[in-house]
Amino acid sequence: MNRITKQDINKFGSYNDRTNNFDDDADVNAFIDFLKLVYEDAEFRPKPFGPYDVDLGVYIDDKLILIIDVERWSAWKDTWPSYYSHVSFLGRKEKFLNKPYQFCMVYFNFDRTKFICINKEDIVKYPTVDRNVKGKMDRVKKLSFDVARLYGSHLTNIERGLFKNHFIRKIK
Image 1 (cartoon, rainbow, N blue to C red):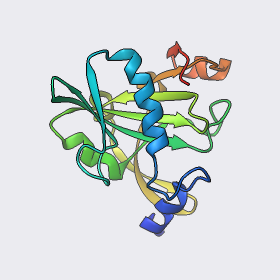
Image 2 (cartoon, one colour):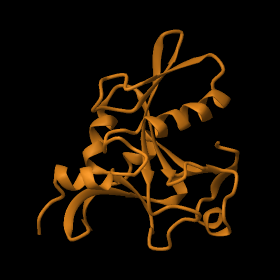
Image 3 (cartoon, rainbow, N blue to C red):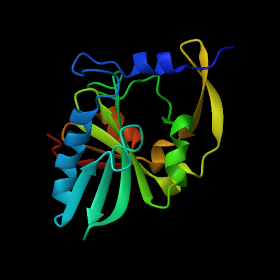
Image 4 (cartoon, helix red, strand yellow):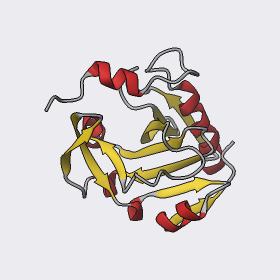
């Protein structure tokens, strides 16, 4: 079976509201808006290591304290899709786990009204395995809902049941 290619990845990240598959500025800005509620004395710098690395750096007193990568899932709209039995952390993002900073992976629903956060300490506990994605193989860590924290103002009963760590908060 063939592996996922860069061309496949480009198709997965293509949304009508983006100029190209790398244009995640609106996703990053939506998360910055949330972080401003959490960190009063922080500075938020998109793409702290360049355009093809993590999406966001959080700085306090000009010191980098946290790096964040942000994804948006088209299949997750009003409620968590029934065919998602876990949260997937892509193997190609493992390079972020090797950086000497705290790391957090953020997954937005399509409308950016809900998101999931998972910390590096929880991600590294899971093995990386092969998974079939649209007829091709990709490497992922299949993360339990138990290590994910879900935030949003209109969480469904399904989401509150799956994500024990959920927080009702207005996102945008």
